[in-house]
Image 1 (cartoon, helix red, strand yellow):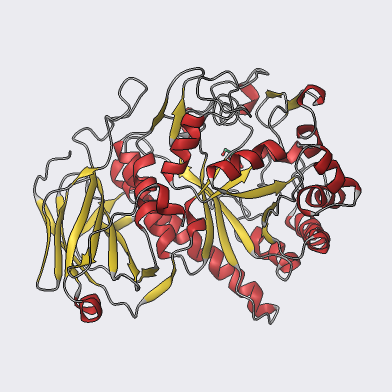
Image 2 (spheres, protein in one colour):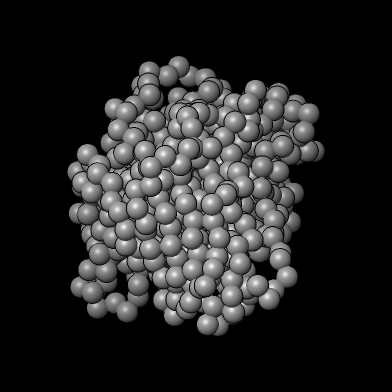
Length: 526
Ligand code: AHR
């Protein structure tokens, strides 16, 4: 664990149960399975693997997915979906065609498709978030797909599903209207007007089949796109009344060894969210709409894109190693901080998916035929999903700052808190962005204690490492993990803790009068 070093100062905030941001939405702990590299094949699915179930799904990976606390899983892409024919992936496996996947230059055997994914999702206890192809396809294929997936029976596509062994409708509620259609790399790229019109008409038609669905319109591929802002405005002018969410995607990495800026990455995510909220609200105001659109941050993570050779340099291959980034301790701290940001915006961000789940820029790594292990970034995700309960409380920290080349001076502390009114339990999640110094944390608990009596610390986890570049591997799967912390206590209505440099911390408090209970990984779905 990181040595404490010099103390930078004290960061303080007060917790008050009246300052509620929003309920903790489990959908903020989403993930993403794309037909890409080894995410599906030798990731979630490997029929010859010793742990495979009767349907070919790796149970070691399914167990880790449950432990991760993933709530929603987006599928089947990503760039992959923009030239995907969903019909290829249903029906008897022997009859499914092998296709070129144009997005990632993959050979796609279609051994896994909609019904298979739904079997995996049900068994793994995750909600599906299905994407339709609005790149090379359009309204009719999306309508056919939702009829196949959600209509009970008695029509061509619903009876086709039943003949494929799925007697009950899948009842998929959450749907993405395409993927990154502003990007030059995307199959069937569109102008915002073209996409907005297509998305609006597809949304209308899909709702005619199933009015209960929730729909996500495609936002910019990232906040650095030249059309960012203009894209959202025009797309929402066409789709505002037809959709429930606008999507955000962004990936972050440490550039040129600038660790200080990297640790402040959530400043960038925060500004991105604020800009999309402002754009959506301005369209809503212009349309005189009472509706407040939500955000779906359905691709986010650390991704060392600088290391990627580029799609054009890949050979056609089945299940190749693709973007299997190895994450270090600093990456895990940044992932913890990005989750803190998503929680701080729980009033507007309703869905968030870390991209991706297995092997491809993922918290879970596998060897084909071999072991599966947790990358460093697994730990802050799993503990945040397990611990965050009840409502997100607004925190307004004051304290020392650190200098960054990318963002100027930023607060050394990044933090959020959740509060469960029923039990009085409080969880504080905190990141110390300083690369060299510890940070003292002082939290005023009197607002909570007025309602529940004195609080005591029942869990204290810290992810930090003397070597911020340390990674996990098949040989050393637990080199970096969240370990029990020292240097924290409650007294006289205050929580005091010392946060090591480059660290992520979780502190869980309960009323002294209550019996200690610990949320387990398995119970984090409820
Ligand atoms: O997650 C990897 C890729 O990143 C996705 O396919 C695409 O949507 C994004 O650009």
